[in-house]
Image (cartoon, rainbow over all chains, first blue to last red; front, top):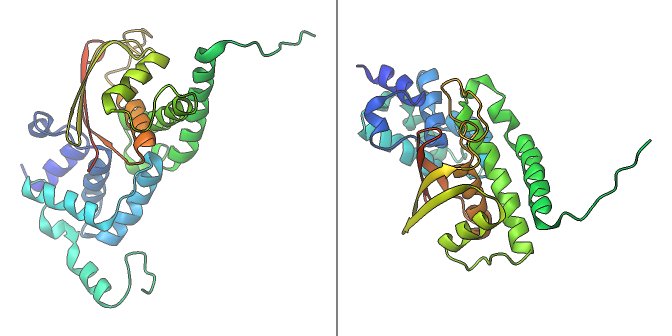
Length: 104
Length: 164
């Protein structure tokens, strides 16, 4: 099964391997779902998409917790590194902007 | 024309009112999420999100009425909640560090077991969300429902973590 297929199944709670381990929570599910829908999604866009979830469940989602989720599912073999554009974010930070595009 | 006036129904009625208020507020907070197809929201996701706000409203009322205190243990908070709404005949709580495990037996708010409704293969358990919302309100932190193993109308296992 390809990582892409695993990703779609996991984001729909249909990946049986994970059901016996740790079920993705609502934030993790959205991270997986958004990555599965977009090719090379950036962390900034992911954070923007997750802001709606954050409001819904009253839980702040920052860059560190998002990257933690991405790493977790990379280790599990559900996400491939190339699916999330992490390098671009580093260059944004280095250029003196934060993830919302505001000048720091 | 007949005029109906408010009658004092005591505490039970107060909590019911607050649950409905929580539902309304929750709908406002969650609408962009649960009504947007882009997010592929399942019935359980929607129930988790909405019931968080019901739980928060319940805990707010419990604290206002001195039913529980913010310094109470998680077990005591859950027990207090069980005192104001009949969540289940039996609810086992195990707290380890930042991890809460719940086992719900004979749930009394199960749409299938008590309501008798056909859930068409879905789940819509409000217990995890209600407890998450209630505890987060009392603690000022944000636990997340991490695992739901729901055997609708039977025994359900729900896990929550503070730091996820």
